[in-house]
Image (cartoon, rainbow, N blue to C red; front, top):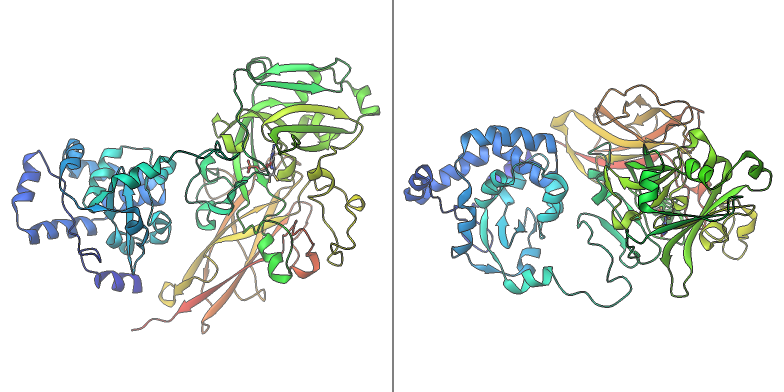
Length: 572
Ligand code: MTE
């Protein structure tokens, strides 16, 4: 309600007093519109603003709800006119606006501006009016194209027509050029383009997570916003000359091209969640500083992976049960190298690698497309149920061995220690390398520190839950009073939404469950602490607080997740 009130007080023009113009139309109906007085134009503008249909269309463009977009466009199409005029708009005399100016407009107070194909648009009123305005703000001050690329799959012209009503200027040529700036010659210069919505924890190497509020918008995380965890520059791999070497088996070295992997072995698809060992490290940092990237709650994502089974490839390379007498590990080497030429590496137990039910993939596809560069193009290992670190990307070599990988990341990192262990006393040899991860859950909506109107009466709480080792999440408990009382959330275990489908086979629950609950706001309180905790089918539960699980590397952070939300009392 307050948001609406705020909206009404906004002027129809931008803070810089740049007038919004309508598209130059070529069809009669639009010509009539243009010949009308400004107040009529404005009336038309406001009629459209208050029409639910087009608002949903633009919401889809900006906030990414594909279904809503389709719905909006379906209705919109019937009502609106020819859109072929859009290209002519380029010749009109909108003022030139710099990127610097656009960047200043990232809030309702300062105005919300975005750029699209060289145009500058002031979408302040739209954001203020739309219930999903907080998500739309993610695009504020920057280019809309990446959001379009991520979400809007239908009928661009019609949404563009809507957007054109908000045009306030042209982006300066200089800034347009900068958008395609020539890259420097540092080792990261060939890293791929990334989606601007990602929260960057480190640029070089690139490490980033999606904003929590969009993480659970879809059961399958779109690849562009899937969290990215790189230790080194992304290697440039030519798929035509790519070779995978499989070593250590009685058959000698087996060398396979990408084509071999695609044609000689049956293709399997597995939907599996990847989680970084450092997910939620920031909560450990609040207890006492730890070493590592300050990940929030979104160093976790869910994708459908396609590729050959590692088991099938090992069998082709000569694996037989006798090998298990002496070999216990399967090592992986990436093609990404540090300045000394050392590659990223990790290993998993042989038992997991050759298990029929282990579902370990040599994946060349992610979400139905070639693996993106950041996620290991052209080939990566996907080890369902196992910590992200062992899911080696840009895979070049597989070695069956009596030993674990000697890699730094297997031996001296990604291990858990007692809260009492510090950097003076730590002995990395004393702890096993993390493989299966513990039970985990977190709240993605509402955001910590956000405000809810009392008039809403209820709050919708959403989040994710997942457990390692193929253990299935069977329950998520949610509390709105700091843990005194609990309610059970509804689980979603497929793209189809609530309620969940059938359980996966025991021990093969590789994918997360999304969950949701609409809970009444507790009376007479101005702040609620919302908590979630999950339970898996071994009845493993999350610990209630961080201090007892604190460790110097900030890994395995899986305490009850807590967000504090303010309740705003109605002013009337
Ligand atoms: N593989 C290679 N070759 N290089 C890496 O830096 N990072 C690992 C793993 N595989 C890494 C790698 C870590 S720590 C994680 S959490 C996952 O990749 C992240 O996978 P993603 O970037 O596809 O989300």
